[in-house]
Image (tube, rainbow, N blue to C red):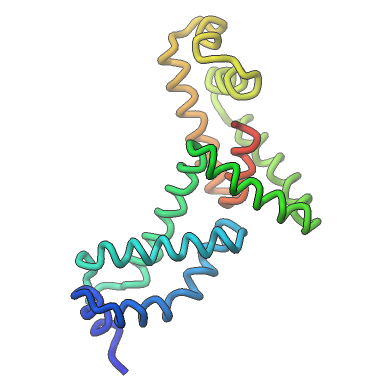
Amino acid sequence: MPSEEEVLLRMKQGDESAFTIVYRHYHASLYVYLLRFCRIPSLAEDLVHDVFLKVWEIRDRINPELSFSGYLYRIARNHVIKTIEKLATDKKLRDQLLSQLDDISHAQPEHQVRAKEYDRLFHEALVRMPAQRLNVFRLCRQEGKSYDEAAFLLGISRNAVKKHMVLSMRFIYDYVHRHGDILFAVYLLRKIF
C-alpha cells in the first residue's frame, strides 16, 4: 500500500487513479464535516463533489509533505463560505435550496424547534447592531424601502445606506457563523430577501 505522500505526488502529476484513492479515502469524513454546516444531505454531497473538483483543478499546488487533510478541510470551509455568499446573490439557487429546506422542515418536526432558535439568533444579531446600521437594515430589508428612500428618511447619502447594508449583512453572517450553521444562514436569507 503506497503512502499518502506517494499517492498525492502521483495525483499532483495527473494520475487519475491516485485521485480516486484520495477521493475514496476522504469522501465520507468530508461529507460528515460539510453536513455539520449545512444539515441538508443533498447539498453536503454537492459540496463534497465541488471540493474534490477544486482539488483536482489545483492539484499542482499540493505539497505532499504537508498535511493534506488540513488543506482539504480549509478548501471545504472556504467553499461553504462562498456558497453562503452565492446564496445571498443568486435567486435561483436560493429558491432551489429553500425548496429543499421546506421539504425537510415539513417532514421533520424538530426543524420547527430549530426555526424558533433561528428567530432568536436573528433577533439577537439585530439587537447587537449599531443603531444607524439597524435603522438602515430595517428600512431596506424589513420595510422594503429603496436605498434612495432610506437615505432621504435618515438624512444620509445613498452610499452611506449601501455601506450600512453591506456591513449589516456581514455582521449578521459573522454572528451566525459564530452561533449557528449554514442552515441558519439559509433561513436568514428567507427572512432578509
